[in-house]
Image 1: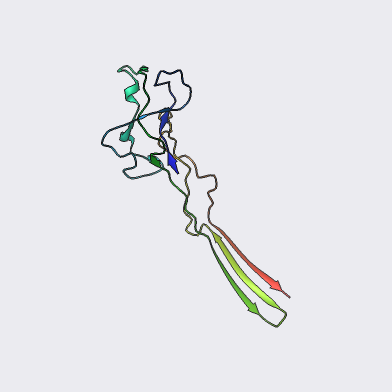
Image 2: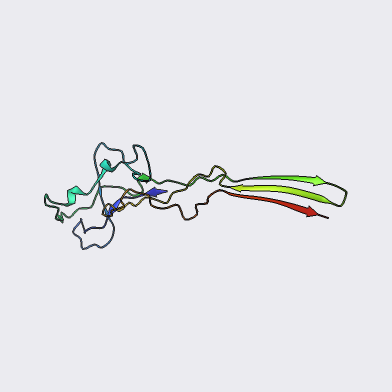
Length: 147
């Protein structure tokens, strides 16, 4: 998934907007560089909103929008590997037994939710949950008798 950094603290463009505003990218910095973790998903030094504030921290309505593009950050993505094994045994012409095992999320890989991309948030750049469809490893073993 591709994510977009934004801010909601004020209307940086001064256009009476309400909602998400673009932030600025720092020249020479790669937003997707560095080691990724749940505490810091992107290169924080590549994104700033300091151009929208004066030295005392008050908003400056300068009549422009941030230069960050849409979808510039690579999200965590999803990884899932499922497997199944089946073995049929015939005891007579009429009686058969099937042994089966199914494993969901075989490597037990955690699938994280997207990090918070709101520069105004205290959880900015942090992942605080698992993805909505994240599954822990599930193993199902069974037998089926056919006659």
